[in-house]
Each structure stands twice: as C-alpha cells, then as structure tokens.
Image (cartoon, rainbow over all chains, first blue to last red):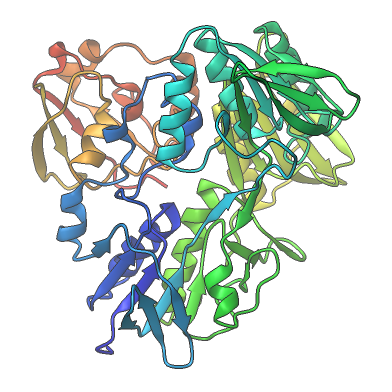
Length: 406
Length: 107
C-alpha cells in the first residue's frame, strides 16, 4: 500500500459511502474525507419533507455519529474546500497546503440551478440544497399567512409545496412543462399528482414560464408569468434542477460533459481518480449512452463501484435506478424508467391512492411507478434486475403473486 | 431514556439508550450498530432495516401498518411473525428494555 492517503472530495451521501466502502473493502491506510459544509454528512432527502414539517430535527439527519469516523479511522474534515487538483502530481490543494493522494474520489455533488430572470436575486427567493438552505425555508414557513410560490413542479418544488400546505400556508406551483414531474414519471402519474395537489388546496399553474420577480414596496413580490399573469408571493421557492459540481474536475483537465465523465467502473479520464453520485455523467451497462442521476440510489451504488475501482477490483455499474418522493399522504416510488414505454399496465386503484403503473417496452418490463404500494416497488426492483417476464394478468390481479415470478 | 438491546445475527448484543420519539432504526444508526442498513433513511420504502422483535416484546411495540406488512413480504431474509421494519417502531417509555435481533442479510 502506498504511503500517500486516499482522498475523497465531497462529504455528502456518495462521499461517505465511498469512504465506508473502501474501509469495508479492506483498505487500512490513511483516508481523508473533505467536505466544504460545516456539518458532518447528513441526509438531504428529508430537507424538503419531514425536516420542514418538524417531524425530524437536525440531529437525526446525520448519517453517522461523530464516533463512527474515529472508529473507522476516517479523517473527516468539515469546513474544508478544495481549491485545486493537480492530477499529474497527484495532489490536492486546500487553503494553500497540498495533500498528496494515492487515489482520489470526487463526490462533489451538484448545486442548484438558479433562476436567470430579473428580480430573482435577493431576499425572499430561496433555493434548497443544504441544511442551511432548509433552515432558512423552515424559518420562513413558520411565520403565519405566507403566500408561497414554488417555481418548478419537480420533486423539490412539489415536496416543499406539500410541506408548506401542511403548515397552513397558501401555495401556488408554477411549472413550465405541460405536466408535473415530466422528467421522471409517466403522464398518468403526473395527472394523479396534479389532482392530489389541487385536492389539498395547492394552485397549480402549468405551461407557465416565469418572466420576472417583481419587488413590491411592502417587501412582498409578484411572480410575473410570460402571459403577464401575476402571482403574489411572500416566499418564492425555486426548484428547477441542479448543475453538477464539475469545476475542480474541469480545471484539472478531466473530461466533463454535464457532469464528470466516468465509465461503468466510476473511473474518470484520469486513472487515479474516480467519481460518484450527482456530479457524474456515467455509464450503466444496463443502458445505452450515459446519464446523470441525482438520487440516493445512484450516490450509494455508484460509490460502491468507485470504491472497488480504487481498490483495484473491477465491478461494473449495472444497478436499476430507483427514486422516491413523499408528497402529502402519497409515497411515490419509482424504479427503472418509463421513458420509451409502449404499454402501461395498472395495478391497484388511483381513487384509493394505492397503485403501481408498470411500463413495458415490447415484452420487457422497464419501469414501475408506485404510489403507496412499497411492496410492488421492492419486488419490481428485483423483477427488472432479473429481467424476467411479467404477465399482464399477474399485475392487474391485485392479489397476483409477483414474488413467485422471481 | 429507554434502553434498547440490539442483537446481531450471530448473537452479539449491544444495549444503548434511545430518545423517546426516535425509531429503533435511528437508535441503531446513531449508535453505529451494524446490521441495519436503512437505505431510504426511514421512509418505510426499502425494507433494509428488518429486525426480529423478541417474542416478549412483539405486542408492546405496536401493530404493523398495512404498508409495512407489504414491505415485510419483500425483505432480503424471510420475515417471520416477529418481524418488523425498525424504522416503523417508535420508541416510547414502554419500550424500555426492548430487545431486537438483526437478520444476516438486509439487501
């Protein structure tokens, strides 16, 4: 083993998993985990959900207690931003000091995409990525009679909209596309969520571009739409996607293309550097082409692959992607993809708020969206991974035994 | 604070204090007890925090929800009548002394 430490840049879910996995993989040398935020690694998904509604406090967001890092001999350094990577000399620069590495893992995540319109900068227009962002949103939602406008009808916008509504605020969601969560779910599921939000008193405006945030003398705002409609707001929550954090990789000369480009082994264009999580444009042997995913599943599974690569093993990334989103009483779980499906088969009932939509391309099951049917979701992950044939009749019969197909 | 004893699949025990309102899963994670994965962070969405509740305690930790029941059909290691998802067991005063055992496989 080299005397140089293994260094991981980025202490989110992927970074922590990468550190844990190289230890589990038998690496017993020096291991540095560098994070720029002032906290130990924490769970981000609850920030737009249970954290806002006060069901989960900050202490409970931490993935691991402080003693975990000591026990695993992981030298975690928070408040530590890396300035540069020198790939040819195998060094990272931190505040003027250099740290040599034997292998480097980049788990730099993503940052929020900002709204590029007049009036969007400044107080009252908020984004969500970090615990600090969430604290800010939470404190604003704790005031009474707030008019909340969510710009973006994706997971973040809709989850915050649901939380704000549960806290009694009046809420409007503005979405540019013709349906909600258009990037991730099939149209039937978008329609279900439109009704769900409307039934809970959320105003949803589709096909609406936002032109300007008008600042009014009383500190409130108008969200001005392309068609000149104006929606009054005290808080504007923007959830319009994210931008991969590629700046360090880019400056170091690594291949980047809407993410740090990695192969199915999480290897970047430099043989000593791996990358995992939201920041990567990656290959999955299950699919053609490359993709960038922002999810817990991708962070965890890809970090395990990256750890194997750092340890000189070769494990190709082939996991079926999965995601979830909690909005009001509906637990949405997605596995695989509905993109390119030619047939959708429904199990359960939309009226009863418990259903799964199974998507097929020819005879191949490619994806399943489930609402309040977590058992279907877990089994579907296994069915898609195994590539087994799933008869339509087994799906439509609510008692049909999916497990027996495995 | 209520004490909970976690028993690994091969019989090693660890007893820790878990705050009221937390889940049995969180008690394990925050005390760095191996054997509970909790991929989804406690959302009753992944079935990787499966535990076997000591028979004496089964009736005291509350009922499974129908969603949890569904999930228990899908655990990596076969569930039994004593199985629960530990993210769904909330710690109360009555849980003081609770004993749970982890399965060998969670994923």
